[in-house]
Picture 1 (tube, rainbow, N blue to C red):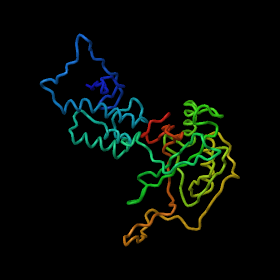
Picture 2: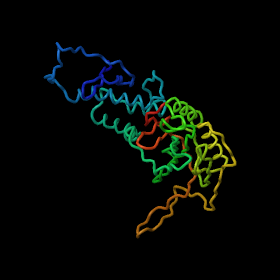
Picture 3: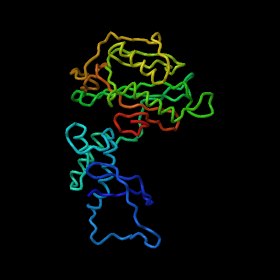
Picture 4: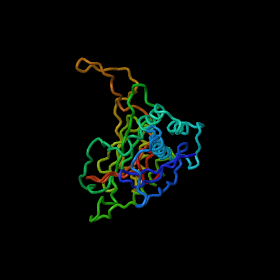
Length: 322
């Protein structure tokens, strides 16, 4: 029999419903029969079992998060290990029969290894964005790509790349010459990102390499021609075309600039080392060739406003669309 435990905040206010223990399916919370004539009993029962009570409260809350993380599964999903992702969900889902050690392992798998614990944490973006004219005051769209974890060499560093452009059709805030961007505009933008950079519910993959390709078109959102490291010029052209399609701006191949350094790419698995202050360090790879996958897109407004995630294929951030 599933547990129907409605979560409540510190003031006793009922929060959204939680889930069924085995499947993570959302339940309709029960409404306690409490009135002024029958106040809440503020004593623990004589047969109170702390661990059993903790399980009844904790497990549905945990499984509700599991269901959200695996939201790509259909609503009628049943526990199975037929696919790698279903197997992960089964491993993360807590059961009433679990002991403390198994509960800890399931929690560790979801929050630490799969990264759900990073959800809604502050994001470090690397450096401050330039806001010089003619792009100051416009929202900024970011696309983030990273290497699949299983493709990272032993003792290697996971490669990633972030590309951005300005949404020059809109202002960040009201009262400007251009219309302020709205939630409807962001949802439309999110759908365009999904159409251009998501294929079969997975992020588009491109090959990074030593060739640096930039695109400079300030009026249309590319003020400084930030480089995109690729393995071929044609792939960079395709990526910039897709980005222009997302923001509904024309693409001009004459504004592409390609820099091909004489130095070749080096592998992440290089055995060459450097000696610094008498200590040996492994040499960093120079623009290694690697496949990078689209993970998520968000819009930044500058100042104190929090960024808005448009789409997130990792399910670690709350996005406008899935």
